[in-house]
Length: 364
Image 1 (tube, rainbow, N blue to C red):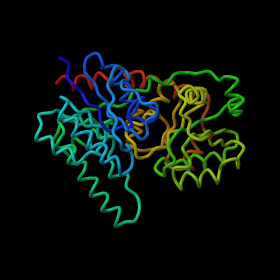
Image 2: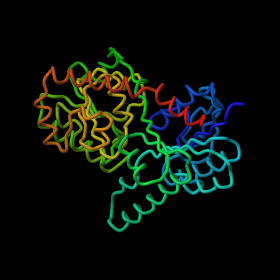
Image 3: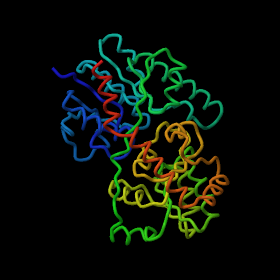
Image 4: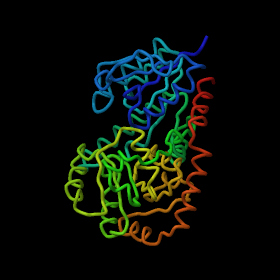
């Protein structure tokens, strides 16, 4: 009999955009022969619902996977899975209130911590303090009731090992689903900037993504073109940047989020270099995808980005240091940087390697 495995904590399948969704896609794709897999899906955000995908069953719940409803969505998924499945892979801590129910069931929990969420809290001091305390408590509950904790970055792995007496496993993300895609005439017509050299960055429009640093640096380097792909309208931060920079500088191109994998692959794989400005993520899927494409990478200087790139990237702390880096780049340096990023990605960030780690935990 195959073990029955529930995967909880995402919008579900088919995967559209996001690290956890992509992870679930490859877990189901590569492990469906060894396990009976079921994926819990958000009914509200799912179009053209299907009962199976990648030979895995899909179960829909009438809640959103994001925002406050995620607390209900994940908790109900977990409690339902306790009754029906042998192992639960839980992605993120939204279902925290259901974790203690494990004491009534002899079920294994594999918990992907996703990140150190309390470090991302911003806002009014008093409210921020309360939110930090709550998120630390949530994290503690989830970790303590899990059989295995997965960290997606060495920095997060060290944090878990140093703060909790529990087994932690390092499993990053694969990036080898990103592939070189040539520029077509259609893309040249839609995005005229691809006819010239350009640098690119892809991220959500959040302050911790530091998009403003990129834009401030490039507005003073008119000889380099910058393309930024983001969901600008989701935040005041994004809307403000879009209003300030869109069509204001001849070398800066702001694109709305691109969800077509062939289009985003074409835009990325034909760029001169990739800029990764995230400051509060673990191993960012967008970063390892760029590395897998063999792109030279320049990163915001935080420990998690250094861990992902093995200290072999170039790093900046603000728009001034970024501008200095860009002005000092030469063809040889860019070529070597791209080769180094590709070597790391081919060695570490493949879905075959990552799914094998999950398989080993499921069979323990």
